[in-house]
Image 1 (spheres, rainbow, N blue to C red):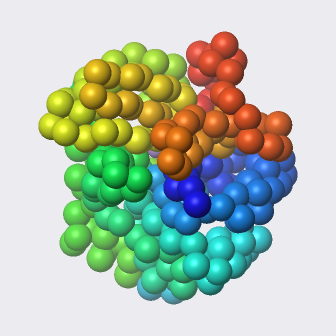
Image 2 (image 1 turned 60 degrees about the vertical axis):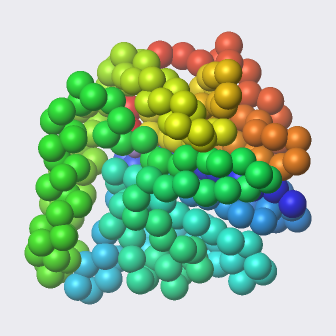
Length: 260
Ligand SMILES: [Mn+2]
């Protein structure tokens, strides 16, 4: 049995060109791993926007949520750690998918490994504007106020969350990557065997003396994920519709509109 880590689908983002291909690959992936998945960690930004208002939130991805529910009903433990686009998932998401929701960066343990998991937003120190916005958007009073809005008005929140990060994300993530490595290295120094994050949309594996940092990339350009079993951690890609190695020569600098 294996542990899988995935993130950054941004389902529903208007800037994703081939949504049908994305949805088909994701459903095929869930089917493919069904036989050996024990834990499935979704490390945020599954949705480009999800917030539960007074009148709920319209589920635009019934095929995907019901596939996740099928897995959790079959005994798979799905753990959802929200990202900067979908941190506000709540009761309706939980009942649609059967997932457990984790609200903060956390430590988990599998195959004797201490693993630090995080979406990864707020790790890059120079991104002060986002770090401030994050505090506002995660403030309990503000969340309550937003949740009282009907979803038609509350969609304003979606625009703040989505367009803000799109403007910032463009071309800037490359320069943020060293901060992720430094952050991970210090956690490895504290005794973690692995630090697994998403958010940058750039798959990365950085080996330290006593541990590893893995960025699981995205499901927009790279279709990457991390798999852990008794053979250790591996970064894999499902871009060809089956499990394969990720070819790092395929990494390209972000161009045009590209949100994180
Ligand atoms: Mn993100």
